[in-house]
Image (cartoon, rainbow, N blue to C red; front, side):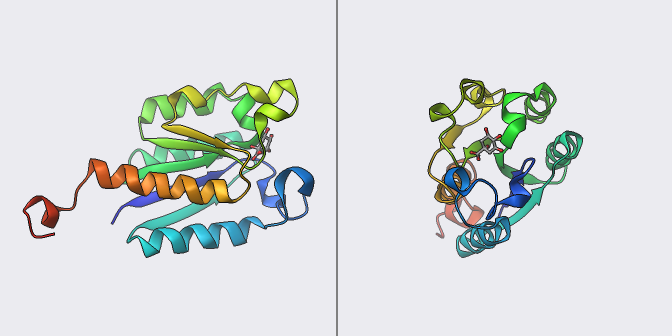
Length: 158
Ligand code: DQA
């Protein structure tokens, strides 16, 4: 059992009614519920947090570094393209993370192509809609299974 944290950046609380041509019709609550169920089905715990405030996301990453969180999935939203503070938090804490975007940031305005986080991430998923979060959680679970085989399996009692 591991703890996975999902972080959503600014304006993602508006999902469902925000520019559906880019972000689809699912609400954030519906996405978070599916992610928690997916993690639970694999024996993991998943918590989600959305914030419109950069410092709250930075603090959430810092806390994750101390509270036993094993993996972070983050859609940094607009902070992807601007936040050196968020980048520095991930660099400081050193937790593995995957960056997710609902839309394809490479097929939109040029300023969205730059990410301050991407080179620190295990991987980036962009343009697959809410499915991208699910794929990221599955990749996180896979990553955790490879890093921390459960004790029974290590002793040969799998
Ligand atoms: C986004 C893409 C960002 O450029 C934008 O600022 C967002 C959402 C996405 O999920 O596609 O708020 O991260």
